Amino acid sequence: MILDQKHLRFQKLCRQFAETEFTKELLDKLEETGDFDWDIFKKMSKYGFCGVKIPKEYGGAGGDYLSYAILVEEFARVSPVLSIYANTSNSLGGGPLMLAGTEEQKQKYLPPVAKGDEIMVFALTEPGAGSDAGGTTTRAEEQEDGSFILNGRKTFISGAPMADYCIVFAKTDPSQKGSRGISMFVLDMHLPGVSLGKPENKMGIKGYPTCDVIMEDVHVPKDALVGKKDKGFGYAMQTLDGGRLGMAAQGVGIAQGCLEEAVKYAKERKQFGRPIANFQAISFMLADMATETEAARQLVYHAAELKDAGKDAGMACSMAKYFAAEAANHVAYKAVQIHGGYGYISEYKVERFYRDARIVPIYEGTSQVQQMVISGMLLK
Ligand SMILES: Cc1cc2nc3c(=O)[nH]c(=O)nc-3n(C[C@H](O)[C@H](O)[C@H](O)COP(=O)(O)OP(=O)(O)OC[C@H]3O[C@@H](n4cnc5c(N)ncnc54)[C@H](O)[C@@H]3O)c2cc1C
Image 1 (tube, rainbow, N blue to C red):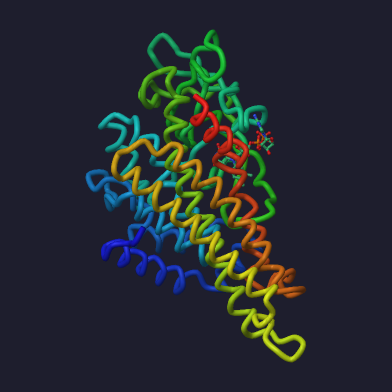
Image 2 (cartoon, protein in one colour):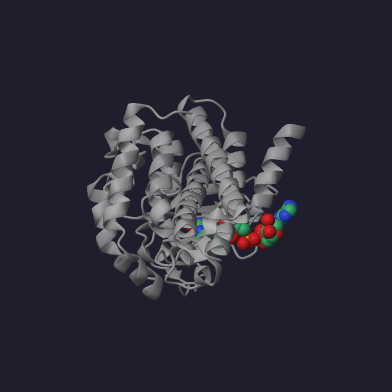
């Protein structure tokens, strides 16, 4: 796919923003503290990145999936963690409301999320329900007045410590087995009974805190229910389609960042009296890295194009996520290899890329889950 002028201009804007604003000083600070950086988040919001895919009538830019993928790719090329800052509102945070929210809910929640005034995150995973998200045990008991009482624990929730709202999935009808009888709620994180686990000490993507969300007798109003009661699992899966596209784009950005660092280093570093790029073992690694990166990018752009055309993109999104996540790891591995010992040292960008890449085949459906989705569609 060849990008048109509109998307090329947007790509340029995102690239310039990332190259200018994601300074080494900021990236080192994120790495050292692991804390969320409000300043860069506010800057992203000012540029409208947090609402790229949110419709204009709800305060966003009304962009398409391709623009969203470009944004995530360009940010991840410089900083995988900062690509998440602008991602959540457009995908797992804002996505469920765009998909199933009432007009009132969209008007209430989306504008502040699009503008970066409020943060909304997504909580599906539980300690005992990861890949098997249908095994949700968080319970939402309906009261006589239509309100609900929530009890349960969600785990590994990205952005939970900063969140104002959280999209939560809970069983409303325990008599229904598996993924049936689950509903989707928008949870106000400031309600009594909501608490957080300790921030996880992660291998990578440091600077975007992740922790558990605990709900103990949390009383939510009737209008906290998003979409139809007992149909929440379907909404989760549809939201994850779009989310997977974003994470696939993150993989492409990481691979591209690694490739550029490796090309630069291979030309500069001399051994045996010549640049290591002159050794075929190195140049062929670069060729493989470039090929895998481009193949991943084309899968992502194709999946985005399908979604923008309103076509069924479930399989394409899973393929893009699966391929790009694995590609990011292959490419990051080779980038470190090309840097030799220096690639193992944190001063070099590839060391961070290597650690950051490791999450891509895990969250929003592991690579094995993507294989299950793809093969399931082939064999049905
Ligand atoms: C940093 C981070 C951020 C996250 N952010 C969020 C978030 O914001 N919101 C959220 O809801 N979740 C989030 N998650 C959770 C993430 O989506 C899950 O970790 C992921 O879905 C895998 O679940 P699990 O960790 O329980 O692994 P498991 O499901 O226990 O899987 C363990 C291994 O078994 C494999 N496996 C499982 N079932 C099968 C099968 N049927 N066939 C073959 N292999 C299988 C898996 O692929 C994996 O390799 C985050 C996780 C991390 C680490």
